[in-house]
Length: 150
Image (cartoon, one colour):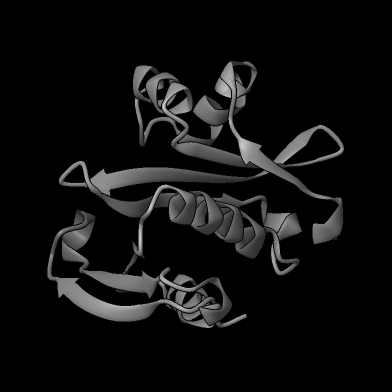
């Protein structure tokens, strides 16, 4: 399935789809700005958006995956990995050597996915999410593309 997927940076024509996926988490005006700054990556299959990745920068310098999402009936088919590979290649071209991400402490599936694609656990913030749920942080070395764990 993943070989039929087109992955690319979002463009202004994707705005409504991106808002539908990321709102109310992220205000529409921020999504529009992030599209212009090439901080949103989308995956399409036959013209339908099936995956979405929002990039953030910690301290305006360090790349961090703010959100990665795949349509539920399209999961387990490599779309998330394809989005991640696209991002990694783009970050390497910009000279970045590390990527961060995170998952809520009560989300074992996303934690397993991070480990599966080569992230290593690097920290924890207790009680940061609604309901007092903690956040586990992950780090991935981008210094050599062959270092991918998948």
